[in-house]
Amino acid sequence: MSYNVAVVGATGAVGREMLQTLAERKFPAAKVYALASSKSAGRELSFGEDDVIKVQALDSFDFSTADIALFSAGGETAKIFGPKAGDSGCIVIDNSSAFRMDDDVPLIVPEVNPGTVTDMLKQNGGRNIIANPNCSTAQLVVALKPLHDAYQVRRVVVSTYQATSGAGRPAMDELFNQTKGIFVNDEVRPELFTKQIAFNAIPHIDVFMDDGFTKEEWKMAVETKKILDPAIELVAHCVRIPVFIGHSEAVFVETNKPVDEKEARSLLRESEGVSVIDHRADEGYVTPVEAAGEDAVFISRLRKDISVENGLVFWCVSDNLRKGAALNSVQIAELVAEKGLSGR
Image (cartoon, rainbow, N blue to C red; front, side, top):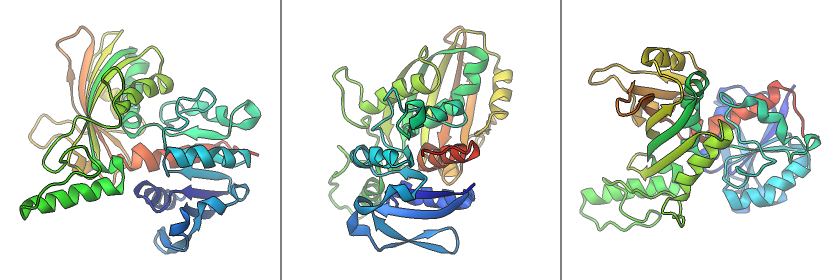
């Protein structure tokens, strides 16, 4: 069975990555539509090695001609056009935070909770909308899933070190321009970020909440509960660092059952979507540079946490544009296709 697929926000960094990922993974697409704002209509985008797609205006697109729509155009756009697409019988896979915590919208990472995919169908009381989790959450739950199955994770402490691409192409441009400017002694003028991002670290992602946490940190806690287990307690501290692509996380896990380090390493090695590269040597770990362009969630620096009774510590790195966004969305679409689901 083949599907007509629309990519909403196709001209953005994640939208382009979605097109590339659809082509690379040979998704069974009969037709692919690239959608963006009317000012981008008519632009040409590459699809695969040889094909070119012309961008169409989102506000005039007929979603009844599409079977699946991958949204990466921000929450406000998703709130307007997502329900319209779903009502027309198109299955929406949205990358924004607009629908993630809605009770009738499943939040899916295919390696973790694929069985919830049918919950979104209108005939099951859903809205034909599936939410893609926050990029930092997506890679984390892939790593936590096998550990939770074996040892019952009860608490997670995570510090994230997130790439500028998580804030979009303008954020990457700001890092580039500031870095270049510093070398020629230009004045640094933050625009998108609150402070200088070049050669710096900013402990602030998304807006502050009343309790002092940022919304990014809140998302990681509530999304992990929804995807994996509501009994898991999680606290996060999220930091933006001067990296273009690749989110990194220092993860401290406490479990209810005793943890065996060797067994945990084996479980992670055997898990779908995980690559363990962990040698206790100078180059025996993965950094964002190596993770960029790769699909896997990489685990390094795995060891026992000696400060608690049942605990593990590890380093987790992944390409945030791929597993954190485009790849996960396409994997959800593959899940839809594998099950032969239709929103009509």
